[in-house]
Image (tube, rainbow, N blue to C red; front, side, top):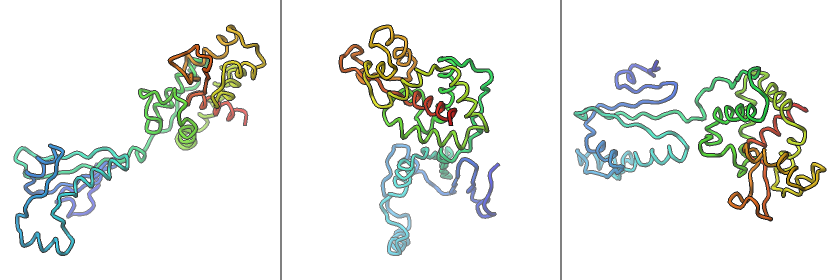
Length: 263
């Protein structure tokens, strides 16, 4: 339900909702409304020229029609949703609706049923996808591929970790950490932790005290690339001698969970 600020706001239809602010003015907005629909706002002659010039001298108006473009730019620069403009068929009123910034929308805690998850690679990847979808305003959404990218991963990891600290239902984070620890071999953790800095296949296998051969590569590196926890630095040339592997945002979150389990 809208919370009207006072009787004057009630009469003029200015309202505050939990997710938006509405402002409604009952005047003839035909010209400006048409301009906004065309993504253009032009200055027009004052209806009352003397009054307009008087207000301009008092610096209460500018006669340049920059108000709405300024509002649109400020909202865009702030990362806020675009406003909505309304009127009726006769254009007897002009209404603007400003929406809450996504960062201020109240969320229910992230609380998956960890007892129903199968803690193998696919099950762990599923819970990570759910967490990224919950944090979509931070990582940009799974659809944009951010979850599988290493670029700027450490900065995003900090923000997601803050989300975990603030929004994950009590005990769930450690429950996820225990599940991941039970479903991931120690060598998998070592690979993901070591490859936070891009590393060659040879260096990764040496770190595991293993011989650099096809069998060890297929057992310890290739599965992590396939599921998106490692990424190739030269993806269009998989067999390049200069190929390196780097832990993605998902992989880094796994490392974070495993370190939480050990703490």
